[in-house]
Structure formats: structure tokens, C-alpha cells
Length: 255
Image 1: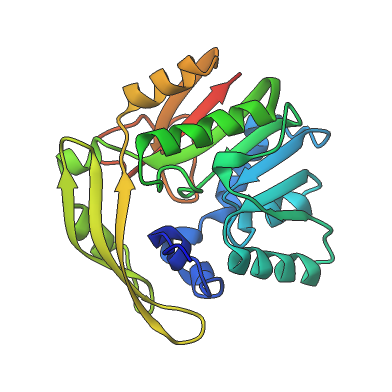
Image 2: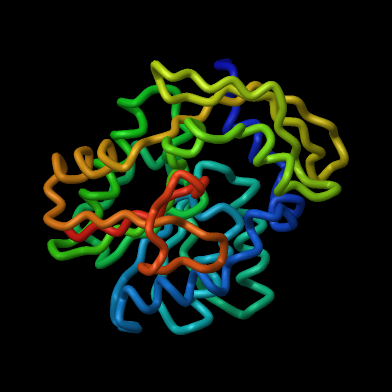
């Protein structure tokens, strides 16, 4: 039996606690932005990659959109299904690996928010595979909206200090951060308590990207327009120019 990857262990039995994390509290504003970008066209089919507990999927479904949520974690999906059921929503939540999506030009738009798979993979090739598979899932002229870690941030700031400043009691904590300038990967020790009350300690490894890398990767996949902005929790906007102060960047690409 193979050993679980850190991102598999992280989201195991971690649905309820995940929904209480600081970084999950911007759902309404983020969905407002998605609606704006899609011109509030409720005829569009949307794919939510790395949907987690379904917070964006459910909110957009409540607003009348047709959204399919996929995630690697059955625990996260189970919570998502329970939340949808309580809202009397019929949503297709599917357990899938984002590196191996089966869709072919089935969706008008895709979103991948709050590091929904990308950029958590062990290699750049695996991360790129996620972008490839999402692109294959989109119809021509489809729009891909996602957030990812801003590689400019760790050049000017301590990731560990930033995480400590945005964490509240009961949330996951991050320590011993080591940012590798050759690979733009941050290695850290994440400690948290799962929904069953078990304390977990994981060695995590996340890839940060600079804007020019993201543009090049997406253009190599055939996107005709790529725009990148600063991603502010719950306040996504085209008015937020990306700076070294932004921990995440917001990417909007048109196929």
C-alpha cells in the first residue's frame, strides 16, 4: 500500500475544521466576482476543480448556476454533499484527481480557488498536468479563473510570519518554513487537529509561481488572453494590481 501524500493526509477527516479556517471566509465576495466574470450567464456549465467542502460550488448553485465539483478527498466531498443536501441542492460532486480529468470540452468555465490541487503537487510536471486537464475540459472561448501562490511574495516577506499573522485559535499552524530559491518551493511543518480531535503533523511542500511563469504555461496551452491580479480574500477584483504584498495571485485566462 503506497504512502499517502501530504495533501491527501491533510484533507482526510478535515471538512468541518477546514470550513472554519480564516482563508475560507471569503466565499460570498469571491462568488460575486465569478458571477461578474461570467456576465451572470446562468446557462453556462462551470467546473470547480479542487472544490473541497463545496463552498464556491454550493454558493453558485444557490444563485442558479450549473456547477460540477471535483476533489481528490472523499472526506471533503462528503461534507460538501451534506451541506448541499441541507440546502436542497442537487449538485454533482465527483471524486477525481485533477491530473486525470475525463472531460473533453464539456464546460464553459472552470474555477480553481484557494490552491485547489494546483500548486500542491510534488513536481512542476504534475502541476502542469492539472492545467492541461482543466484546459481540455473547457470549450473554445472558455474562461479559466484560479488563484495560486505568488512567487514574488517570499522574496520580500517571511511566509512563516505571514501565516502566523493570519491564523486564529483552532486553525492550522505552519512553522519551520524554508523557501528554496532554486525551485520556488516552500517546505513547512503544518500542525492541526482534524474533525475527530486527532492532532496531525505533516511535512508540506508547495510551489510558488511568478506571474511570467503562469502566463507562459497558459499561453503554451493555447490560451489567447491571460491576465493576472492580486488576490485579496473575499475581494477579488480586476482593480487589484499584483504586487509583492500579495500572498496569492488571481489568474483569468480565456481559451
